[in-house]
Image (cartoon, rainbow, N blue to C red; front, side, top):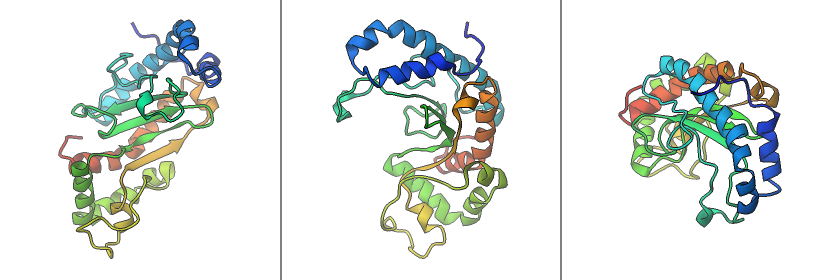
Length: 231
């Protein structure tokens, strides 16, 4: 049974602080129990506590506390794409993705846990070209709906603006004079709120994250509609 979430305590942050200076398989093998006790266990508890409130926001986004194949990102890096060769991620992350999504490129709510870089919100990160085209087309065809997303008061209060890397020029087939062309040029669409270490150490962190998920709902609903999945 998953324990109740009481915040990410000092043991959680200390594990990653030490890992940054010992990012090798030998150290991790010795400290694997520490990883499971101080990192995996509280993240699983956090996900389990998020689940009921997330279901109220949308029943189509999963909060799965399992350490493997659940909402928690694995700590292992794909060293084929790691220029520095480090085998482990030096932060923790959680994605509550759409139940139809199979990977990190699906629409989802996200939490990033790294000392000095705590953030949470929602969106879609570097979607496949066909999915990206659908989002861009929906912005172009329904400008008033997109305007309602970026002008939503709770959205602005929590995130200020949409984020995501962009093309230098408008994508093929889109009018450069479109009033939303800067958003149409984006390759990702997400809204992130910066958190604090003090808040992440508290059990109230769940409520803080859920509040940001609720504020991100207009964007998530727009993206879900664009890619033909239920919100």
